[in-house]
Structure formats: C-alpha cells, structure tokens
Amino acid sequence: MRTLLWILAALMAALVAGIAFVTWQYRQTLETPLPLSKAQTIHIKAGTSAYRLVRELQEKGWVKSRWPYKVFVKLHPELADIRAGCYAVEPGMRPQQLLANAAAGKEQTFLATLVDGEKFSQWLSYLQSLPELRADKLSKQQLAAKLGVDNPEGWLMPDTYQYRCGDDALSILTQAHDAMTAYLATVWPKREDGLPFEDSYQALIMASIVEKETAAPKERPLIASVFINRLQKGMRLQTDPTVIYGLGDKYDGNITRADLKTPTPYNTYVIKGLPPTPIAMPSRASIDAVLHPDSADYLYFVAKGDGTHVFSKTLREHINAVNRYQRGHK
Image (cartoon, rainbow, N blue to C red; front, side, top):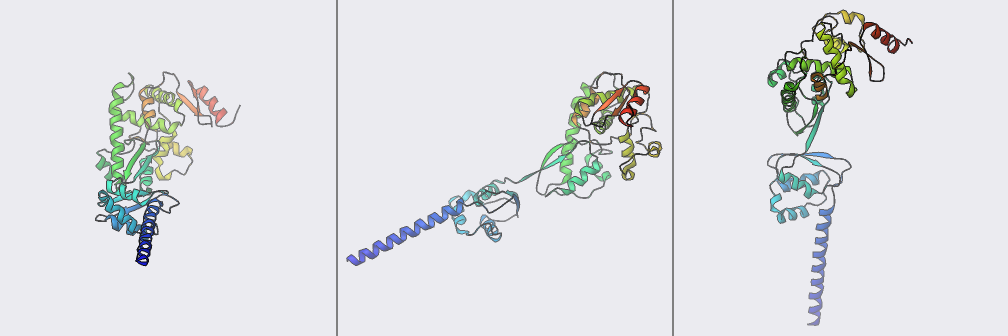
C-alpha cells in the first residue's frame, strides 16, 4: 500500500512538473519577440487563417513552436478570423500582436512625401519608386484626364500623404489635387485688390514661378511683388526657371544666351505675360505670397549666392548688383 502511494505521489509530482513546464514554455514562447533586426512587411492573403499565419511565421524561422499560439487563439477566439492585407512586423513585436493587428485589420500605412517646387514628372518617378504602391505607367495626358484638368502641372498640393499596400498612385494624386483645389477656393476670394490675375489659375502659375525662384520663405512675398510689378508695367518676367521648364529634356544644367533667345511657350525672356501653365508644384506659402505680395517698387533681383537676393528698383542698380554678386566686381 505504501509503495502504491509513493508511486501515485511520484506520478502526481511528475504531472505537476509537466504542467508547470508546459505552462512555462507557453508563457515563455508568447513573451519571446520575433527575431527581427529591422521592420518588415508581411502580406496576408485572403482566406488565410490564424493557424496558417503562425505556420508561415514558423516557415520564416520567426517562430520555433506553433502549439502555444494555437492555444492562445483558442483562448482568444476573436483572433481566429484575420483580414487580408499588409501588416508591419517590427523588432520587439510578439506574434500575438501581429495576430491582433490582422484580426482588427490594422494594416500598415506608408507615407508619400510630394516635395514643393518639383515638376509633375518628378513626382511620377518618385511615386513609381515607392514600396507597395501601384503606379501604373500612365501618360501625363491620361492622368490629367483622370484628374479632370488640362495639365496636372501645379494642380497638386505638396504634402505628405498616407497610403496602404496595393493602393494606386492615382489615389494619392487625387488627394493632392483635391487639397490644391480646396485651398485655392479658400484663399482666392481673400486676395489683395488690384492683382493682375484674371483667375486663380493665373495666380497658381505665378506661385509656381515664385516657388522656383527662392528657397528663403521670408523672400517669397517680395519676389512675388517684383513679378507683379513687372506684369503691371507690361515688362517681360525674364525668369530663368521658365526657360528651363520650356527646354525640358534639352536642359543640361546650364542656361546659355542662345537658350534665352530660343522661343518656347515658357520662355519669359521672349513671351510677354505668364507662361501657359505652372512650371512646378507651388507650396501654400508661395500661393499666399502671390495673393498677398509685399508693397514694394522693386523690378529686379539677383541671387547673392547664399540663398537670398538683392532687390533693385532701377536697371542701373540691378546691373551693379549683377556685377558685384554674379561677376565678382566690387
């Protein structure tokens, strides 16, 4: 009898020890983060179960044992049904966190930053380089038609936009276009009186020129006033960025005297008034500067070489400034 009791006690101890070991292993497994050194994206296909996802994690070498997660899902049935999509997997994350995100449909979001002052073609190249974004190679004309404009240049608001895995680049461009049209509709009625613009599109064209002419925020209203003064006096704008835009792929980084004399619809050394379209994507600040320019009599400006400009009222003052800052004459 005593021997039987010893055997039962030993079996009970072994059972308790086994349960304790299994419990420890269960908790240890759940508390072990995924062995990642950098963030990654995992694609979950439609119809994938929670158990299948854990198996895929094991196949990747991210999980050693599956059974603790099967038990975890049994104890948390709300995690059994997971949604298809792309999900972020970051260092320090535990598999059950990924299961919870997938069950809630908390997909990974990505950022697309559309930089002010760049051309539409530059934005397209950038969008085509982004991860997990579908950027079908549509022509400029096709995209313009989808956005409902004659030419998309200038019609898109520079900003940072969110997208999800599999989204189309057109969805970002549409957001940018909606943001620009909404902003123009808000600020155009509040413009200063007496501006030489027939409509908000002409102001947008001018804003794109201001955007390309200076990187110094405080100078934008002054730059805008120079161009507005020239328009009002019937003077040509004579701004290099419009010449560069008109040259297109022919521009090699240098503007020659021949370039300044070459007629294009954008060469403001040749044409009078504004070019036919914007030459870049203007920021809100440049639009504001054009609609609320400084009150000044300047007609000229020249770059000092430090990102700022010297402004002049007469041609003689301008020539002196060019000699000093561009040609090194004192």
